[in-house]
Length: 375
Image 1 (cartoon, rainbow, N blue to C red):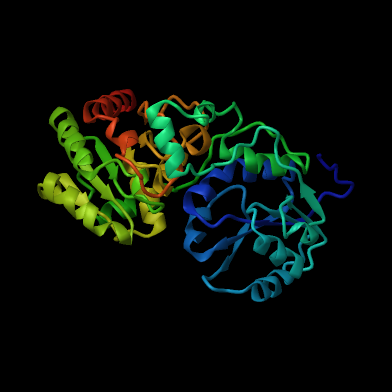
Image 2: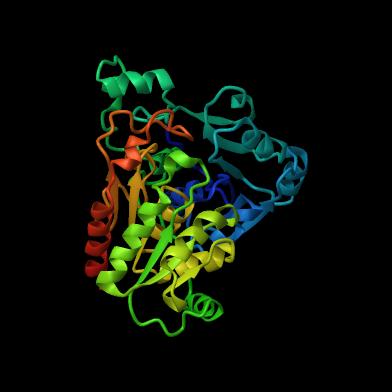
């Protein structure tokens, strides 16, 4: 149910989400919110680790940061000074609703969920075509791969509009905003890209840049095997003489070093794992002609910056959390025919057939098609 404001809110607080990829998927809703209330001052409450994501973003006037371990009372006190008219709560947690309640914000809107409705003045019912990312049990997976499962019909393609960006758009639509999806968008300025190129010795690049992002925080089930990243990178380089940028977080040093040692030769491959700030990561992803990546936060960042991505999907669903606007032809989202995919598990309980079923040649073909398309 949408609400027509007699007096449009002047100061809006948006309680942001906690993970990088999810945060990127909220940008269409934030842009629609800005479109609905162009004169409002919009403040985003966001974890410290994501603060740089919102620099120069047209939907956000300012950000209020919170640190790991900071409690709801200190956050509520921090928010009170903002004298907000409206709080839009994007996460589904009880904690996020309690924070804005303790801030004394008079209008508090978010999804109706157990243990938190009391803290919202406008609980919003779930969308009719929302689809939960339900983890499959090992027993269910065994039944699916043998072809004798009552669960088989649940593996059908999600309905249109199932993508996560619609979850956030549904909340802004309850405020009267346009529910039609926009592509997720992030913003850089040319000086940032030039500075990152200089810092990491990329000023003299003349050929295409291929990004490689072989990590994934959620678990091993989201990772296309490292040896296949290596084989694909070698084949693409043979055909294009491209420069490789190897991305990764602090926990990806080992896999990044493995890829670098197998592909590195002078400045033809640069290992950036754990070396970049979020803003530098954004600059270097923007520099890539194509990013070959697992389903992870940098995948969403690259797509929102306009960089085409090639993504092997296994345990997760491109229809639910794929990069960019659903159906965007700039990206190549690859799946195998494994009947148990997506399972949404951190580790595969059988033989990892979903990822092993995506061959190197298929990935190389997808990367090459995008390199030639973007040339």
